[in-house]
Image (cartoon, rainbow, N blue to C red; front, side, top):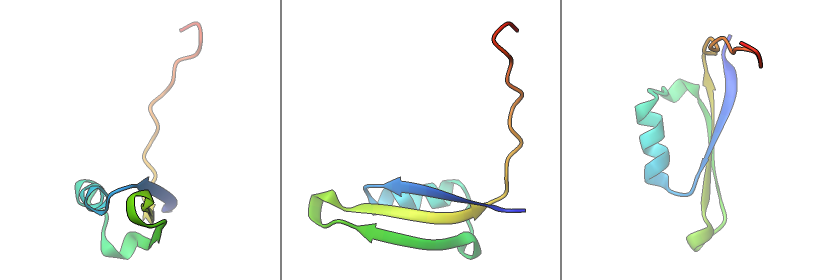
Length: 62
């Protein structure tokens, strides 16, 4: 089952690079929101991704 994730960035080219690097398909992109104006512009990407198995974390003593 896919989970919903988000990514916030200040540059559209960095967001595009993130999408291409992580091979996010068009079908998995829910929406891209642009907020602010001028130098304060923020891009928020909401997308679906398959959950990755988490690495086992060792406890405090081992």
